[in-house]
Structure formats: C-alpha cells, structure tokens
Length: 290
Ligand code: G3P
Ligand code: CA
Image: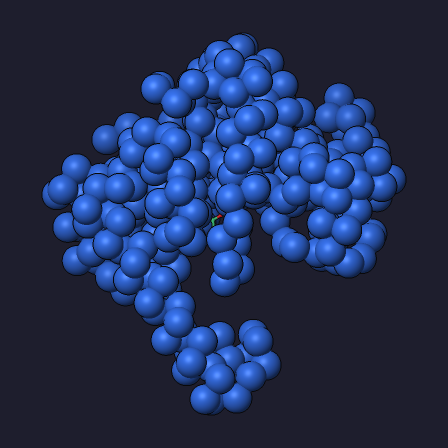
C-alpha cells in the first residue's frame, strides 16, 4: 500500500512546531501532506498554535485568545526548539503562521499536497473556530464538494464528537476525521494533578466522548478514523472494524519503526509523523529532488 505521510505540526522534530521553517522542511522532506492545529486570536485571525497558551512554544505567556495577531507577531516562536533557522526559511522572526500563510506555502509546493486541519476543543464545542476556518478556505477557492483548494486537498479533524458532527454537515465524510486517544486514568490524574475520584470522573466523561466518536466512525459520519498509536495498539478490533467498513485509517504520531510496523499490519493508509524524512526512508520511498 502507498502509505501517505503527514508532517505533524510540520517537520516538527527538526524545527519548532507549526513554524514556517517546519512546514517548508516538511515539503522539502517529501511529505504528502501536513497537519496543523488552529487558534483564534483576540482580533479573529487564525493562527497555527497547538496549546491554548503561549508558554510552551514562544517567549510569551498567557492565553493565545487574549492577544491580537500583531501582538503575537512580536513573539519568538522558534528559539525554544534550539534549532537555528536558515535565512531561506525566514530566520527567527516571522515564524508564526496564519492559516492563509500556510496555504500560501502549500500553494508554492509545485505539486499536489494535503492539509489536515485539527480543531481543538476542551469540554465545550464552539462553532466559531470551524466557521472561521471554512470561511478562509472558501475565500481561497475551497469548495465543499471535493474539499480541494488549488493544489491542496483539505481534511478536517477533531477529538470532539460535536465538532465532527458539525463538520459533517459542511465537508465530505471522506475528508472528515474523528480523532481518538487512549485514556489512562493514572496518567490523567497525574497530568491534571487531581485525586482519584476526580480522576475517575474525568475518565468517565472522556470515555463517553470517546464512545460517541467511535459511533461516528461506525455509522460513517466520519470517513477517516484517527486513532493515536496507543489507541490502535489497545483497540485493534475497532480499527479492523472501521477498515472493513470502508473507513481510511490515519494514525498519529508515528515516529518509530516499531509503531510503523504496527500501522502497516493494521492496514493504516496514512501516518502523521514529526519525522517525515525518516518516515519516507522507513517506507522505502526516496525523497524526490526538484
Ligand atoms: O494529528 C492528530 C494529533 O495531532 C492529535 O494530537 O495533541 O498532537 O494535536 P495533538
Ligand atoms: Ca494536532
């Protein structure tokens, strides 16, 4: 099978995630597509950032949603990674990307590429983020019939079943991905620093959301099944059922040969990786040079 490679937040093992450099490197590495997470700024711009706050991936602090795009442009989103960004990738300044700027980069790829957009939500779904992204895409010629804008084929992903249901009314099922994650109660408790009762309550709530997401794959609302590697390892029967029902398996985040073997054995068609060049090599695909 010709397994497609999506660069997770760009070539994020090489350069800081979601930066111009990470995406340019992903294209140079021969990725078939790229993945990104979106946030809305205080003035309604769509920026590529994973976390709700700025602390981990920039020299700023506090919620992304409290800052304007101009304020975010003042921050350094690259240096925390410790990799020097070459001048042809724009240097340290200018590494923050909007969705439009990522689409410009992909339009310049000179070949067909894929874009997987993830919409992140906490407990509550709010349509504003999805609407803003679909509006921007439509302004660039994307249409809901083929989900293509120029040379870019766009797919949409979320862990939140309400977001997937909302998207299902607006994008083709074949380009709609229900993400799934293996939930470990002990890890959750540690991460959130809560006691056993609160930890189990949270796990119960997450488990219900998970079941709802699995249902959207069973009934075909979403045509792409997006389990994490840990979920795939723990629930191979679910992946096999969705594959048999005609869903496409897109697994994240696949960085090792061991995880790739698991994916290949399970019939996975698309892998999302921080290491697109290494993944190409593991799959025995040479990087084409222009
Ligand atoms: O591609 C899906 C994957 O990105 C989901 O997890 O936390 O890396 O956004 P996360
Ligand atoms: Ca993501």
